[in-house]
Length: 215
Image (tube, rainbow, N blue to C red; front, side, top):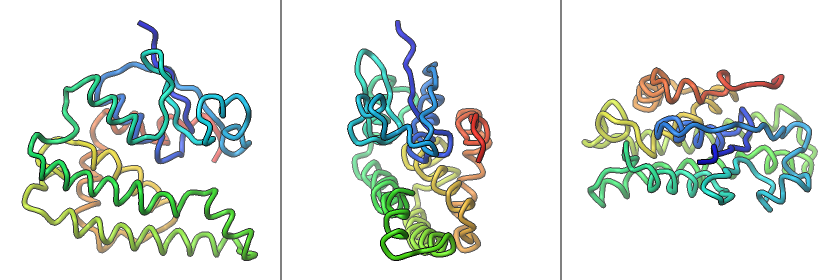
């Protein structure tokens, strides 16, 4: 069987999610860096993998897959254990809602290309970019903290095993710290994040563990 190839960038949140999932599913893979700093992601070669010019892209089972949540869903179907969502439909929906609140609400508006375009359009400075990031990350994570206040939450966002919502949460908290967002009012999220980051699958996927490029 051909080894899957993950085209990613070390500090990309979406790539970080997929690395965690591959590790949790015990799927060996080869990583190929697509350097966002040098605009490699919008080059012809990478756009042949992903016409959107985003990372990650995963070459697996004879297919090139894009969009981190779609990739994670495929990996969960391909390798069912450990399951990333509980069997109960209502609880699975709650956890999807948390994952989507991060991946579809916080992440897009804080994507570096979006922020750079906004800053250029309005003559924004680096300080303006930071204020933008802090505002939207803080606002979004406060909502996620409230969503985490649920009887089914435990050491993780669902009970005692990491799943989809945790996989999406941890990279977002990495970004929050990078942009110096205060997490003092988010004790549930930071406690879950700490437990996750102690797990080998999460630790091996962390940006500092895979970084082959200068910051």
